[in-house]
Amino acid sequence: MIDSICIIITKPQGEEKALLGVLTSWASMISTLDVRILCLEEGVYNLVRCASYSTCLIKDFLKERGRVYCLKNDIHEKEINQGMLLEGVHLLEETEVSQLIDSCQSTAIF
Image (cartoon, rainbow, N blue to C red; front, side, top):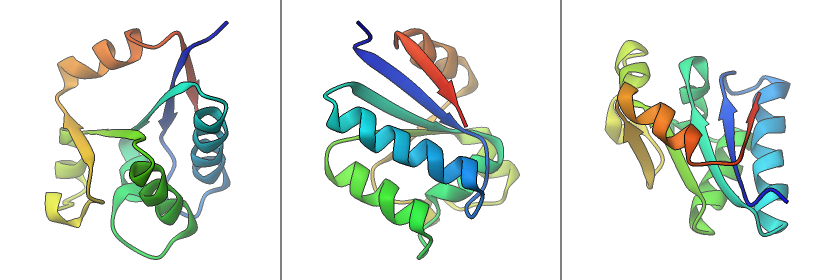
């Protein structure tokens, strides 16, 4: 049985795949799986404070002790200030991404 999953979101806010990734994360967490959300590339836009549905869900996910990560280089490339991110998002260096993914038994990419 799978105990942990890393949900990787590479699509921006407003794209169906991004929302499906967030919803899968919620469903997995409710099913008592250890869930980590990792936003990469365009997916980091889901972590910017705004009123989008996916961002509101991620904010609630964080309140329920969900763990959310993003690649530090991606937010710098997109010119996103760290203060613009939702509170509780952890920034990773490139070398830490593979460690995070390897720490989970399963990975899903949206």
